[in-house]
Length: 630
Image (cartoon, helix red, strand yellow):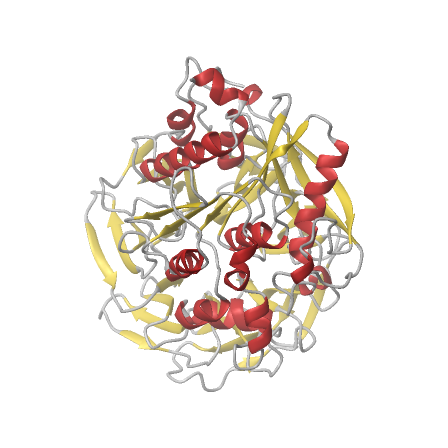
């Protein structure tokens, strides 16, 4: 651990330069990515052959590197998403090699660049301009934008065929909220007519188009009809699909550069590794990488049959690599910086499992549920080395996500400040198959929250070095919902809590979030308030504010459009109505983050968040590291 007496841990960690959204140029000779080594997020381009990097932007790109970038078809410009202070109501801009920036698509709502046509003339967009997320095309020559689909539920994953004449996408027209189907339609459709629904999976399964084959007659798709996500190559001429699968969850990424294989990402416990399948033989091989998390770039094809990817472990920050498929060798294109730290300063992750029936010993009687199915729940524990050590329970967001054996800046910051950290892949997390995800449907605030608390109880029972009188919960987004819920459902377990951009009132969330989050997050998981009014009330933390028994810190970005700031304001008002008081030594603390939306990667905004988090936890719980720093 770095010495807090000589290093400004907070600013040094938050200021470590970060690379985001690498993507290869059409000819595979360059890589565009965001990087904030100057102290601000900027667009950079790396020459793969020479290793030289050039900064293209000078303050024109967003400070928060949330959204991806895409090359133009001729490789002379890079498209990026620009919003207003993190509100995600993006427009699409372009920047060229001279640094000239111009708006390309400006529309109300959120605009999401899904694909760039190989013809150099067409952009495929998703947009909420008319309410729901639907597909639009933009003609670069004329500047005309045309709506192409008109569905009641969100359209996802739009892909243009190599000849630009067709588009593949995913949406749901079935009565089953869980269902997602793959469609292929003429690009020129103006009302979504004549779509071809591919016979990929069963009704109720989730199918997505992932990549067009080089010949334009094959489509790489994903399917979870058989539980574990698998990859298939769909022949559009014969309507036949060939499946490639294993005993692990595998998410397809794309065809190999030679078109003779496909690349997928295999999840094994909390690690991820790319796997190549030979299309003719069906044989697979894992890429030769250390255990950790390898992530393929958005466009991953480099010259020489190489793939572009990042690789990280709990103690090593992400490096940008070129992987030679023929030689099974890697070349480092961009090495992560560590500032005053080294990998040895960071805590490694211990992976373990715990049996959970969804009802921990510390459950509040007022909201306790009957036992659920007993499952093995995976978790990661980071030991700070302090003795005794306070513990921060850190549920992930999503909820459709998972914690992995990758470098986590927030975790390592807490560890540097003396806190051990527990992350829990509760039921509903990804990486374990469709049935495991479905455990959360119609049960937000139920068994998955019990899994989190059960894992915390397990650590307290089995790790004698953890201080059971200094246990906090901290989470963002759905993890923020978890933080609220843990504090009011299991008050005996926690001594403090930090809820960041979290949900508190599910009906208000349904009414005020963006349309595609309403249908794809809320309706898919818990239906609508009209259909399930009792469930919406029962699983809203705001219904149980009187159970709060330990200091709570609420943080929320004022420009958040996914989880509106009203969620925090409503909970604050409810606390006031029940007689709780606000202040540094009172029942709760409250902070609204200006010029910020649903979290941020901006260095200054990370420093601000780290400072607020550190101040609250040090005052409310205290750590040995803080004592040494003081």
